[in-house]
Length: 191
Image 1 (tube, rainbow, N blue to C red):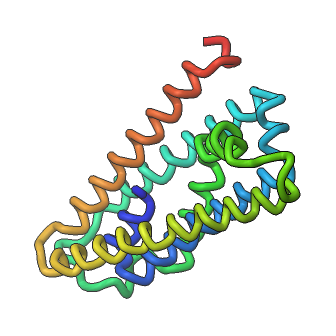
Image 2: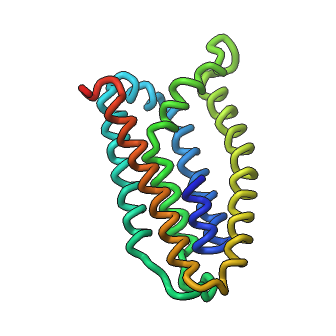
C-alpha cells in the first residue's frame, strides 16, 4: 500500500493507478509461480526465502534513501515532472516481486483453499488467484485515487514535496528495517 500511496501522492492519479497495475502484475507473477510450484521450491530451500527477504529489504532501503535525497521544490507545480506512470509501475512490480510475505501467503494460505480431489489443482489456483486480484485491484485503485486527490490539495503548499518525500522515505526505510528484522528472526538464518 505504501508504494501505491507514495506513487499517487507524488505522481497523481496516473502514477497511482500505474502502481496498482504494478502491484497486480507482481501478484499475477506470485499466482503463476504458485501454480508452477515455485513456492514449493522456496519452502524446500529456506535459504532462498531468506535471500529474497534480504533483497527486498535492500530494495526498500534504496527506495527510502532515494526519497529522502530527492528533496523537492518549495511548491508542487503539478505532476508533469513528478513520478511517471512507467516508473510507478516498475517500482510497484519490483517491490511486490521482492516481497517474501507474498510468497509465504501463497505457500501457507493459498493451498488451504485448493482441493486435490476437485478440479485440476492448477485451475483451482488460477481461479483463486483471479479472485484475489479482482478484490485487490478495486481496493488499491480507490486508495490510489484518494491519495491523488489529497495530493491536489498539496500543490500550492510551500515545502509540500520535501515533506512528502521525507514521509515516503521514512516509511520505506521503516518497512525495510522491519523486513530485515524479520529475516534476522526467521528460522534458518542462524540468528
